[in-house]
Image (tube, rainbow, N blue to C red; front, side, top):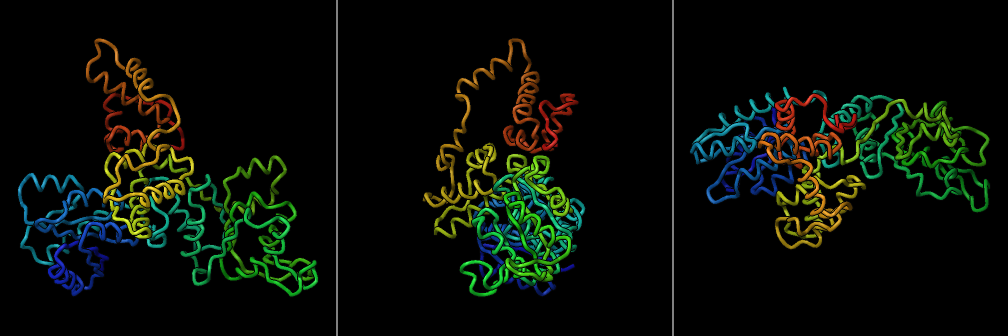
Length: 462
């Protein structure tokens, strides 16, 4: 089995020897010398496994394992170390290492451990999702995003029209590009058209083209954007803004595969796959008569529903890591990690602007930073103090309501856990972040306290 192995080894010469040893056994190996390089590679490429060589005086391996677990939880890590103490072994294994090998150790044993880790990971990972297609783009391993990946993979190889829905800033264009990149049309450029960016008076000519003399200023024939996308994919962003007369012409494209330029009498055949996106309620617009029902059904062959960021909190750490490193590279800053407190604050914030807002916030924070670690004080005020009741008053009222005289410690724990779950409207991922536990542990706690129905739970958080 040929593996794509990321090798983290601080010693350049010894690291090259290890890399050659792996490569000689027909594996694809990339060698990095520090943790920042390792994280950067994990964020921008898909890897089968990570081999970490713990060098004396080097960066703490436990910290790197924690970041790997957040960024790429399905990628196994094998640590090669000189410290065989029980404390060190327990620390590294609980930090996320799949296996721990003590030097001296040969390449074969390390590769065997990596292969076992890959086999174990394959049993836990969703089958048939080639995340390579979204390298450096769509980030997230939450259940909601896994469903998005599955839909992308299933729909990409077909000619079916796709409708992508979701709030502004959730990444609809990234999904459209992933659909294109996985499709047989990937060799041609994906055409992206923002229906809100083109003046209404020019939209018909831009989309469908025109012939010479069709209107004042039309001195030559012009192919429209749909014709230019012949043989490729065309994303129509904010499709809900399209005027009714243009909706009719787009329907003809979908039904008959042909366009008619402004001023022309003949129809021109065109082979283009339409991927539409919107943050509006198209079914509601159909009921109101502002969007054609027949066009809606033609567009809604395959639907991709992108969840808002507040409903996939577990994806925020990996996103934040990537945005941090990308921004640090662009601005020449030393920032390479978040403190635990800063990361917790990012996970607790609601992010009304979704992924775009998170990315812009981190861009600003990094541009103004001077240290290697982003701490809570570096974050903007709206993230640290979101609009709401005074913290001291709110916390005092909460304590009075939750804890009464005579309560046992278990009573207080149970009430507080239920309070946090209810406050997050049943969003287990967000509740787990606020309680500083993983989701599995939170579910175990709820079972232990015989909670059959989760207070405030919504379908979106299930």
